[in-house]
Length: 255
Image (cartoon, rainbow, N blue to C red; front, top):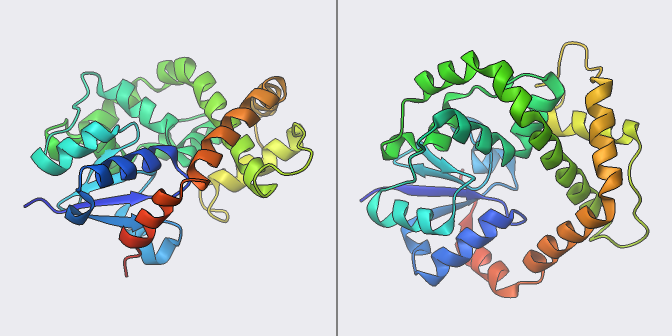
């Protein structure tokens, strides 16, 4: 029988949908559901977990967002995954679904910080029959300039949503008057999102003013809509008592 481990964070909407579906299917007894809210006990550093949800099959990174509940069920029951027809495009989609990877790409203006074999293995479903991650990363690196040109605006938009979500949390669930941030506030948030302490930050962590200006402008222009989107997402998760009871029953910390 395949050993399947799934790393989740309770506030992640994809994790939420995945956990609910697996519970409905009676499959949570067949997987190890790992809570990533505590870094060391969860083992996320040792296992190279870049994003949530993150699925391991027999100890190998086998899937990460974008992953829908139907695919997760297939991985658990039959060992099949959605193998991408275009590995480079799927890898870029996976970056978009990782706030950490997106922030690194945006700060550095480069894909080099995220050319990780574990991230590629999960993105490309390598243990489930997907392509070799090392070869795929070579292809991504060779197309870096073109991929950045096409995808950087989408990376910026993802970060805008991430900023507003963090602001919503910091305000205790959106209570009080919330206002769009200044460019400096955006830069502070981006540095703290990309860096584990100083690890991951550029040698001289002075951020590109044009990219910060565009990100701050995107947040300001769409602030009310972004705030409403985040509120609906997080209130659905926070208010679902059945979901939290499922987590109390099944989610564990490794170690």
